[in-house]
Amino acid sequence: MTEVFTKPFIRQEPIPESAIAAAVEVMRSGALHRYGAEPSQVAALEIEFAAQTGAAHALAVASGGYAMGCALRALGVGPGDPVLTNGWTLAPVPGAIAAVGARPVLVEVGRDLCIDLDDLEAKAPQANVLMLSHMRGHIADMPRLMAICDAHDIAVIEDCAHTMGADWDGHPSGRWGAIGCYSCQTYKHVNSGEGGLIVTDDADLAAKMILLSGSYMLYARNGTAPSEEVFARHKGAMPNISGRMDELRAAILRPQLADLPAQVARWNERYRALETGFRNLPGLHVIDRPASEGYVGSSIQLLADDPEKIPGFIAGCAARGVDWKWFGHATAQGFTSSHHHWAYVEAQSLPQTDAVLARLLDMRVPLTFDLADCAIIARIVAEEAAESLR
Picture 1: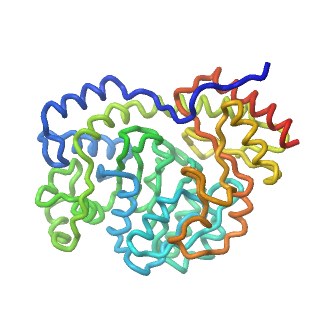
Picture 2: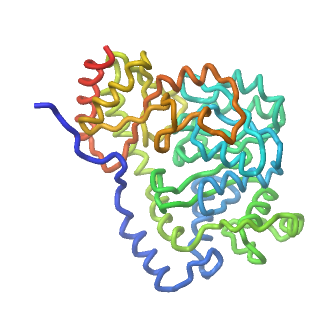
Picture 3: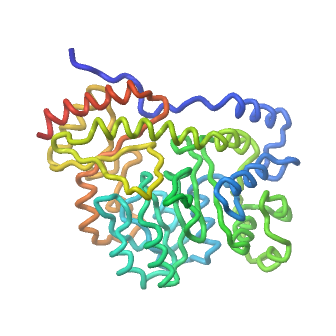
């Protein structure tokens, strides 16, 4: 009998009971506004996340996209300014750049799915800011990347939507550049439905972002606010673009952040099981992870030898309940798109990236799967690869 997998790939784990209890308490208080409670769940979240990442300052905001836009504005990026970013990422990254009127300058990605550092070095003179996307959790050689950016006086914003809890040589993702931006959207590593977090060590950038996020005269209530002297340099200059996180989402997130190390271990256990099952299959190749990369395996990617055979392979897997995304589609599919689909970005030649995306398969690894589920998925993929890709 043909084996079929029956669990959905988009089902998340329930919110922890401690987070539910905290949320109920907030709702009973009626004080949901971002500066409406004292003591504040949002301020406590900012203190805890700053400590967890080793940052001097943290800001909880409405979404990961808002976090990136806030970071760009704090760095003074405006209409017409060029901003370097990965040629392979998700649409909100170039979208954040376009939303402030800036111009994305796309950098090639390599077979390792990271930004190509040779191409970055070649394009470094074109911009003063890099929006670095750790796309699907793949982290580049960060010491070399920072050396390139420092040599060209480029400020780095890290998009850590897929790397909350990850590191390079023990140094947390989001803590290499000037600003780190994280997502708390349902399908990321902590779940508040929507939400974001920002970290920085720069007091002036922190003050600017707090003011931008709609603090009015209450900026000192941020959990890690810099001194009044720092705010005095920026009050009146920063537009109010309301976006600090509300009390309800902060209450939901605090217990999840405390559990993040344990969740990372669970993700990686599942990732390694799938990686072992997918290795050496006909027509498919796993992405080898560098020893220095402390990744979070919430998704897994494969490269296929022959793009022409991918649609048949995907269809065969889908018929048996296994869901792959393919970045080589001619049109955007669901949440999967490529630079060719971003009409708000000037068309750019990225032959290396295009060759990678044509072969790139992507699978979500939810924690609602157990190791037995991973074994079933691996068997189905192996059989379909033998049928379609050999």
